[in-house]
Amino acid sequence: QVQLVESGGGLVQTGGSLRLSCVASGRFFTNYDMGWFRQAPGKEREFVAAISWSGESTYYSDSVNGRFTISRINYKNTVYLQMNSLKPEDTAVYYCAAVGTRGGVVRTLTEYDYWGQGTQVTVSS
Image 1 (cartoon, rainbow, N blue to C red):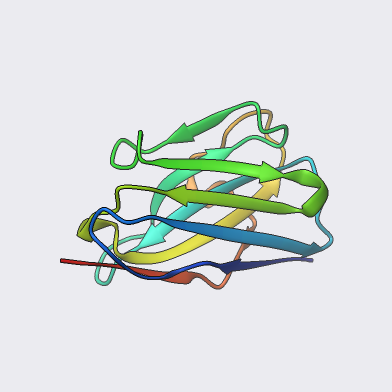
Image 2: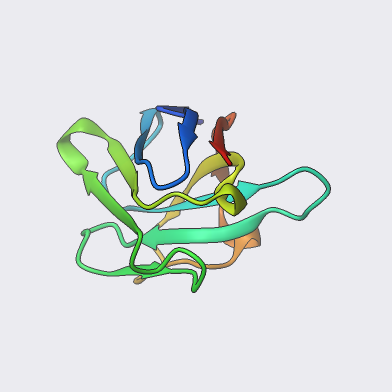
């Protein structure tokens, strides 16, 4: 079984930055594809960003493209989400997810097998 633990969430002002981290443990392998999703109160969980196992391919939702950057350091079993120019509409619980490699970026929620507990991001004003 794979365990994923997110950290780095918090309260920031509009225009500020945060970097989220997700550390994997247990039966986790470097060749897992990874993604970030978010869920605001009363809304469905939505795709944010994804990265292939090699780190060579990334993909972003239109709402965060140009502001967020996903990356990974495989020997640390860690994936990051750098969030810049934050807006109030970015407020949500952010989740990381993992799945055995599909050969590219994975954008669909139902394709992921493992999920973290989530970390709260709140953007004021």
